[in-house]
Image: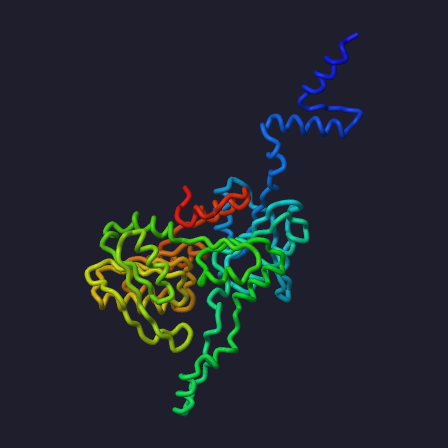
Length: 388
C-alpha cells in the first residue's frame, strides 16, 4: 500500500485541484497556491475591482483617447432622447463591483450633457458599481462660483447711482452660486470622486464632500511653449485679469521669465470696459495665459493693448476654449500668432474655421490620473509633469 504521508504531500503540491469531495477544501487549496505564487498574502486582499470607462455624448473623442492610452475598450452605453426631449441612458454591460469612470465635459449643450452625466452616474451606482468617478475635463457653471453679480438695470437718478456705488455689497444677495448646486447634484447622483482640470476657482473643490482631483494644464503648456516658440527666453507671461496672477507667476517662474497682468473692469457680463497693463512688454513676445475663453472679448482687447505697448508677437494659451458667439471671427481679425487650447472641449470644428487655433492633447494626463486613481497611487506627480 502507498504511504499515507506521501499521498498527503502529493495533494498539497497539486496546483489546481480539479475535483474534490470537499469543495471548501478545494477552494482553500486554490487560494493557498495563488498566495504562494504571488509571494505575499496582500496581493489578493488589495486587488482593486476591474475598471470600466464610459463616455457621454459631449466629448467621445477624448474618452476614446483615454481608453486607448489605458489599453482597454470603451464601455457600452446607449444615450437617447424621448420625443419630449427627456434623456434616457442604458448601460450596456455589467458594472457590479467595478471601478467606473464616466467621461463627460461641460461643453456643447451644457444642460443636456450635465443631466446625461447625472443619469449615467446614478445608473451605474444603482447597478452596484463599487465606485463611480466623474471625469469632467471642463467643469460646467464654474464661473458662477460666488455672489458678485450686480442688478442689470441702470439707475437714472444720480443719488441712486451713488447709493448703489457705496453699498454694492447689498446688491449682491440674489445671484446664485450655481457651481455649488452642480457639486451637490453630482454628489446626490452618486459620484464618489471627481477628476477635472483647471477649475475657474480652485475653491470649488471645497463645494464637494467627496474627493476632487483638480489637474493642471500647466505642464503641457510649458512643454508646448518650449517646443513651438523658438524665442521663448525673450517672452513675458501675461494674465488678462488679476484673478489669473497666480497662474502666470507659476509659469513665469518655471520658464525663468518675467510676467505682467492686465486689470480689466467690466460693465456687464461678456463686455470689458477698460484695461490697464501692469508690466513692461516692449520688444518682447507676449504670451497671454488664461483658464478659459468664451466670446474672446477679453483676450482680443488684451492682445491689442499688448501690441500698443510694444510687444513683438502675441500668443494666447487657454485651457478651455469655449469659443461661443463671435469668438472665431474675433480671433481671425486679431493680431495673434496662435491661439492655443487644450482638448478638454472638442476643437475640431473651431480649428477648421480658424487656422490660428492650435490644440494641445491632454488625454494622457486624464488617462494617467484614471490609472493612478484605480491603482490607489498618488496623482500629485501630474501637477508638475506630463506623462509620456
